[in-house]
Image (cartoon, rainbow, N blue to C red; front, side, top):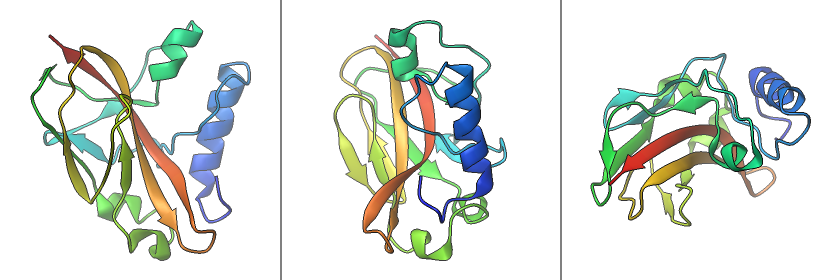
Length: 148
C-alpha cells in the first residue's frame, strides 16, 4: 500500500493480516466495506467465509462475486468509479485499472471482459496506477467461482 491510499484500506489490510495470523501477503481495499466491483452487472458482496487453509487463502478475498459463471463465457468486470473516487486520490483515476484474474491473465481498462477456461475459485485483483511512485497498487479484490 502506498501513502496515498485511504485509511480504510490500511485498516482492512491490518485486520486481514491479524485475522489470518500474518499470513496475508496482499491487502484488499474494502472501501469502508462498500463494494465497488461488479461482475456481469452484479455488485460483489461481503465475504463471510473464513479461509482455514493456505489453499483457501490463495483465493480468499473480502468480497465474493455472486451469480453463476461458466467456463468459456466472458465475465464483464468494472469498478464504480464514483465509489472508488472516495478512497483513491484523483491522480490514480487518470489511467484505466489493471486487472488480474487469478489464472495468469492480465487486462487493462475501466471495464474488462475475461473468460475462464477451467473451473475453480479465482481471485480477481484490481490495481490503480500511482503516478507518484510509478507503481500499480492493489485496491480491490473479489473471489469468483467458475463452474463447468
